[in-house]
Length: 117
Image 1 (cartoon, rainbow, N blue to C red):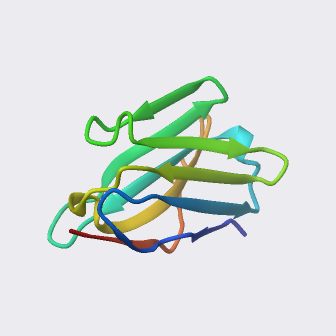
Image 2: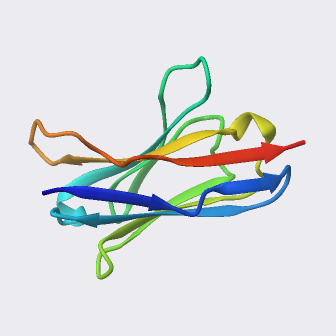
């Protein structure tokens, strides 16, 4: 059974930082494209960042230069370091795993990030 468990969300003032963690079980993260998505109230879920390999990452334009995705294969955990947070970053953040060449698509339960102005 695949589980993705997010943690690290919370309330922070604008300009502050948070680090989200996604602990995976039932899969090996190095065999997956790991991503962070977010969904704000009334909006569609959107890709924030993805890590395809240790040297290949993608970021949404709105977070580029502020957020950093990384992974620790030994801990089977993916991180999202979020700096210079803005109120518009407020959303539920979800961890996602998609196996290379597979059709599966796994989601975590989400963690709330709220940025106050």
